[in-house]
Length: 348
Image (cartoon, rainbow, N blue to C red):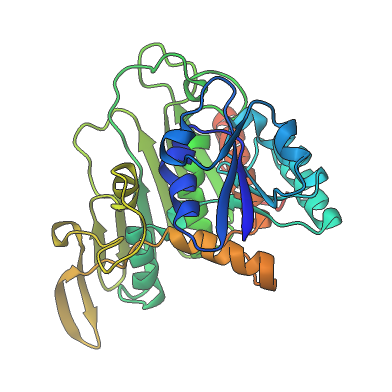
């Protein structure tokens, strides 16, 4: 058993990490840091609640620390956990700067410990389907990939660091880290990055919208997000020289986890047919038009992979080096917005 400590018990722990870990036969949810309450005990009565991070770091029984605190604390808490000889999972975004990320990667190598980032949207049903459509060349030569991650909240939420001007705040670090990660997984590193960032809602301190253009040699990737999308359009729209793939709707796993369901069974991660993607294309001279059954979402694979990486040395699903490229892309997008021009992509 791998004993796990959670560095906080906010939304990401309640919805994602604690349920996924508790459902896994080889992880034990052992300690939880809660400074002002003991909410985790309501659902996980066997956990030990501690009030100081040092109580986790100094416990030799803790094998793995999940750093799922506000972004401003990712670097310092990951650093302390690695120095204490723990494996580390850190919530996305990895860190706030590439310099911080490289320091952590170097430290993890020095300590011979695993460092990975919870980029769970790699395991969404819609993204896995998009990946298969691209890999199968069902649209011919891809010319444009457009993805949206939109919400509707026409006011600035008070009392949250995500809406402030602090390190790692704003929609680009929050939702953009998912979308950029997906693009880099699909297509690798771009040739250039163009970023347009906005503050669309009255009173916004942090950026609450973005329009990114990642240019590749023969096609373009468009990534967009806003808090003022009341009538959502497609999540994905892929254009090729032979056809188009369009996908609406969201992966069901997050809502199922919120409702208290755990991974397992034949229906886990399966989308309802009404939100399957549609394709209009030509294959071997035949015109094909209809729905594409979505792949199953599989968030549980993140911790399956981590267990194998810790115990057998398997390759990580999300290497920290890949997560570092996401942060570098965010930095380039912000600089591109400030300078009003596309910037060439160079490795950090």
